[in-house]
Image (cartoon, rainbow over all chains, first blue to last red; front, side):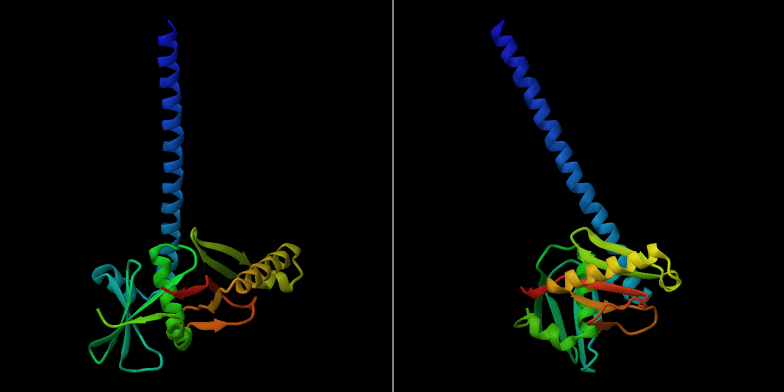
Length: 132
Length: 81
């Protein structure tokens, strides 16, 4: 009798733990999903239609340097290194990240705003790596 | 209508206000602008960078809160990775 009670109790506890874990996982997923939806909305607002198409089709966005006519910054759709291309050749890679995690689409927006509005600070802040 | 967007892990947090209503003395619109200004100052103090974004115009870096801006975006502090 005691063994049955213990088994039933353990079964109930296990079920409760699983329900709590499932709810936590679902909650995190919903927050992540909503953050990505909002980030994509902002991305569509900040990019031109042509830029958005390039990002979706090619997986990167080319942003022209405002100060150097031969330079292009190739920003990846997913977070990663930004390639600097000058006269068709990769000259370096840049690594820059926010202090807190933001969705991938927001990171594309961050690169675009910083490059277009304050390229010098962008270059000073980013870590520069040999082209890979 | 003006809008402040603060990029964060939640995507972006948004605050709206109506500049015309505020100029006409609408208390709610004035409060919304004050709240946006407070958030702007708070995020800037944490190292965020502010930009003014308007359709068909080049992006502009902002040092001060501008209630007349159509849209301002605050980017969290970034560091070399």
